[in-house]
Length: 277
Image 1 (tube, rainbow, N blue to C red):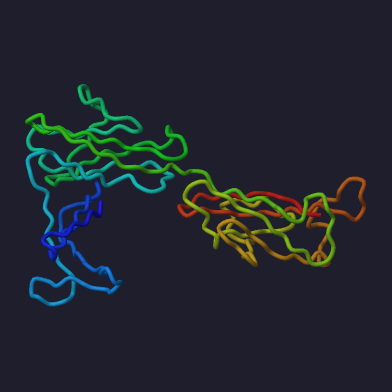
Image 2 (cartoon, helix red, strand yellow):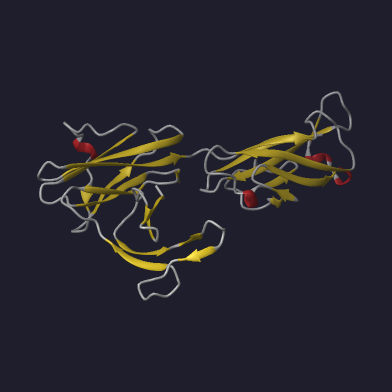
């Protein structure tokens, strides 16, 4: 991982451990650094010109199977496919997967065998149901064996995230009557994919029907919205009794519903209902 050695006083060698997702192809390598006095420098290319940029053609070599996992990655909320590029598999080779535990190498589960896509090096299993997985991090383990019984293993991680961000009201307190123009504010939290702050919106006052994530009209843009908070102002002097529900035993005091729409970065949505007075 980034090991640097100096040979003969003037030959610099950099060793870099390739990531598991590295695939065949052309890559640009740029070399730059500082000397012991802090001066910047770049490498000279094969034409003996300063530039420090080299192009390599990276190819997988050898007879041993090599697995390069492709998917799943990131945050998922729906059923998904498992794919990998597998080289040097040959005739009679097979590729298997298992989630959250290594593949049983002596007796792989035949129901979890990946299928070759045409005549390419891509192998795929689809669909994988997300419903049986818990929320959070998971690891897909791959196991490949070629016709000569040479094997390879690899893994890739992803996160199940089917839960929308949760909004809460921090001011004003739900049971504290307000007058005039009031600033309504709160927080929003999400465990995995993160809050899409521009999608946090609100509706205030009783509606003919309860707003849901399918409601397309009536939502207002927040005065201020961040990945962790939201805020808007409301003029209670313009309040109509039909906008709320009168509090028992407190004439002239009404509970006014506030509907907060939240969404994360992969499209999980939720409407949370709070009240102010």
